[in-house]
Image (tube, rainbow, N blue to C red):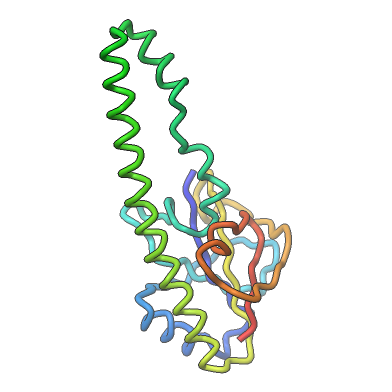
Length: 179
């Protein structure tokens, strides 16, 4: 499964201006034909990572973060099955914890950098005083993008955009912001 983040526009009127603002905030939006349950929406996939997806993005991070937590007991059991000595297990657990902490620190830095880009993008949109709503949605695809229908479960309105708001977003919910 791969995550893709989409910028949604209700209208084509301000499309060019919104894309210019995105470009100035270091976003590379690409128009995509996605099967949303609301066919009037225009979708733009956001900056794709090295695997041509948005996996690891700050958007919706809390929903998937639990899976990545280090469970020391589970790791200890796994190492005991391999018949390592108690000293070796202790060393490997310390090493694994250090690696996990380093990964977490690097992940937090990239989360903050991505969140700052989104915040700057939406602040610049508000300065542009556009009269249209712009939304964000993410979806975990389990097949080709063109084959899957993205069923919009709920439409919510954002009053502020910050790191926690982005991390707490839920899959298949549109988060609209009025310019």
